[in-house]
Amino acid sequence: MKKILLIFLLLTVLLIPFRTYSAYNYNYRGNAIPSQTGYTVEKVAYFDLKEPQDIYYSGNNFYIADTGNDRILVIDSNIEKTVKIYEDFIFHDGTETKLKKPEGVYIYDDKIYIADTGNERVIVSDFNSVVIMEIKKPVSVIYSQDKTFIPEKILVDKSGNIYVISGNITTGCMMFSKEGEFIGFFGANHTERTIESIRNHFVGDKKKSRLKRNVPTGINNFDISRDFIYTCTVNSERTSDIIKKLNSAGKNIFSNKILHFGDYQPEYSESGYKSPEISDIDVSENGNINIIDSATGKIFQYDKNVRLLFIMGGISGQSGGFDGPSAIETVGGKIYILDAGKNNVTVFSETQFGKKVHNAVDLYNAGYYAETLGLWLEILRYDGHYTYAYTGLGYAYLRNGSYKKSMDYARLAGDSELYDKAFQEYRREFLKKNSGKILLLIFTVSGFILIKKRGKNN
Image (cartoon, rainbow, N blue to C red; front, side, top):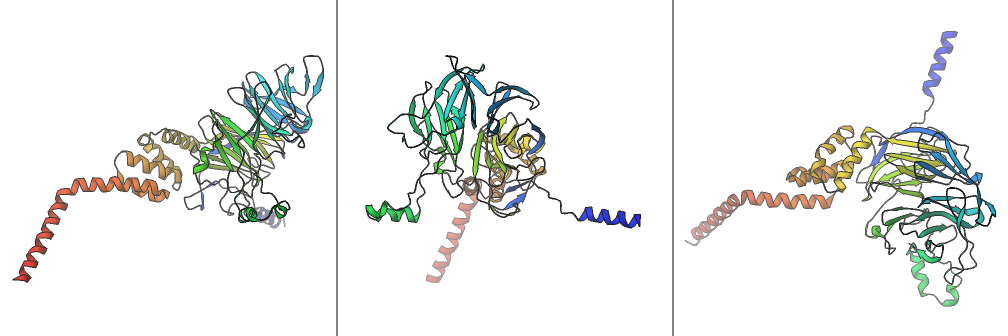
C-alpha cells in the first residue's frame, strides 16, 4: 500500500499543470517565436510599501513614491536597506506640512520634486525636508479654473523647467518655470481621426453641441533623456501617440515611423489577446526604451530606433512576474520594476546573451556595422532566430562587400530597404566584373542575328 500510495503521489505531482514562462520575441512577420532571455531576476525586495507609484535613482539611492503610506522612501543602491523617509516637511516660516498620496518623485540639482497628488500640489524640497517651493493650481487664462490640479508625475529638464502630468488634463503635460510660474502645456496628443469625427464636421452647430467630443488622450507617464522628453499614453483604444519622442519644440521625432508596442498576438497570453496599455517609460543611458504594459504585466525593451530587443515579466505570482507593475527605472545594465500589487521591487540583471546583444546593438547604432559581424554570428549561435541579428549581419556584410550574403540576411530579416541596397551593390559589382563578357555576348548575339537576316535576304 505504501508503494502504491507513493506511486500515486508521484503521478499526481507529474500531472499538475505547472505554469511555465518561456522567453519569446517576434519575427518580422509579427509571429511570436521562442528566444533566449535577455534578463534574469537578480532579487526581489520588500520594504513595507503600500501601492507605490514611482521610483527614481539619484546619488546612489532610489527614491520611491510610497503612495499608500503618504511618504517618499529612500533605499540604498543595493536594494537592501532604508536610508531615509520623507513624510513631514517644514516651510521657512516654521509651518509644518505632510504628504498625502504622493504619486511622483524626481531629483534634480540637490532638490526633491514631489507630485503630492492628494494635496493637489507640487512640493520642491531640499534633502533636509525644508520646502523651497510649493506649486498649486495655476491662475491663468489658459488653465480652466473649473479643473482641479491633480499632479501625478513630475520631471525637470536641464534648464530647471518643471513638467507635471495632471490626471485630468488632456492637452499635454503642464510646464512651469524653475521659479514655479505656469508657462503652458507641452506635448499634447492628437485626436484620433475616426469616421465619426470626420462626419461630425458636417453637422449643424445645434446638433454638434450634443455630440460626444473627440478629445485627445492625456499623457500617462514620461521620462527625459538628454534633450528629449519621451511620453507614453495608456489608452488601449489609441493607434497613435502611444510613445512619443519630443524635442524642445514639442515635435514628435517618431511621427514618421510606423510603430507597434507590446504584444502582437495572443499565443503567450493565457487570457487571450489584450491591447497594450503602456503605463510607464524609461530611457536608459544608451538610449534603450523600456516600457511597462499594464494590460499584460510585461516589460518590453526597444533600442533607440524602436527595434524590439527583449520581453520579460507578465502577470504571475512567481519571481519575475507582477501583480500591478507601476514604475520602471534602469541603472547601468539592470532594470528595476516597482510593483504596486505585490508592494515590492524586482531587480533584473543582464544575461550573457543580453550583454552580447546590447554590445552589438550599441556598435550597430553607432554605425560600426562591420565591427559587429563576429558578435551577430555569436548571438545567432545562442538564438538562431533572433531577427535583429539578421539585420545586423545584413548591414555588416553590406559594409565589407559581401553583397550576396547581405541579401540573404536581409531576406531573413524581412528588411526590404536593406535588400534593395545590397542588390544594387551586387548588381553593380556583377556588371563591373563581367562587363567584358557581357559586351562580347551582346556583339556575338547581334552578329549572329545580322548574319541570319542577310542569309534570309539572299
